[in-house]
Length: 219
Ligand SMILES: N[C@@H](CCC(=O)N[C@@H](CS)C(=O)NCC(=O)O)C(=O)O
Image 1 (spheres, rainbow, N blue to C red):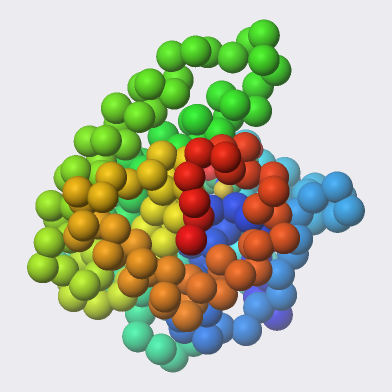
Image 2: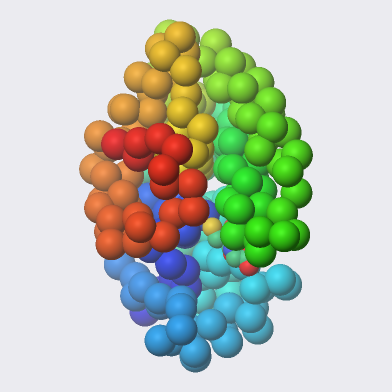
C-alpha cells in the first residue's frame, strides 16, 4: 500500500493530499509527530533535511510535493493527470506551481519560522519583508487570475494543488486585500473544491497551533 508521510496541518502535505483525493488514490497516511517516532525516523532517513511530505511505494521513495504529484499521475489512479502530459501545457503548470510555492508559501513559512523563534532572537525585519513580497505576489496573481477559473491550462491541476494551501495559510496570516477580487474569488473556489475542503477539514483540530492565527481569518 502506498504510504504518505506528513502532517494534516502541513501545507506541502496538503498539496500531495489534494492530488491523492482528486485522483481517488488509496494510501495509508503516516502521521508525523511526537507520538510516531518511527514515522519521524523514516522521514529523517528519506528526505535530505527531514522535510515532508514523503511518498513511499514499495522500494520507491519520492520526495518533494511536485515530484510526488507527477509520480502519482504516472503510477497510481486512472483519473486525469494533475500534471499535463503535453509538454507545452506543462510549462504553464510548472510556472504556476512554482509561483504558489516560491512566492506565496515560502515567504509565509519564513514568517512562521520567525514567529516561532525565541522572542529575544526574533528578526524584527521579517514581517515587513514578507508583507512586501506577498503584496507583490497577490497583485500579480490577481491580474493572472482575471478571466481564469483555475491557475493553469483551464483545468484543475498541480498549480491548484499548490495554490489551495498557499492561499489558505497566506490569507490567514496576511489577508488578501479586497481590491484583489479575482484572487479572492479564486481562493474561495479552491476552498469549495471537495479535495481542498477535505484537507482543510482534516486540519481543523490543529488550527490553534497556527502561529499567525490572530492576524486574519482562515475561512
Ligand atoms: N519543497 C518541499 C517543501 C516541503 C516543506 O517545506 N515541508 C514543511 C512542512 S509544510 C516541512 O517539512 N517543515 C519542517 C521542516 O522544515 O523541518 C516540497 O515541495 O515538498
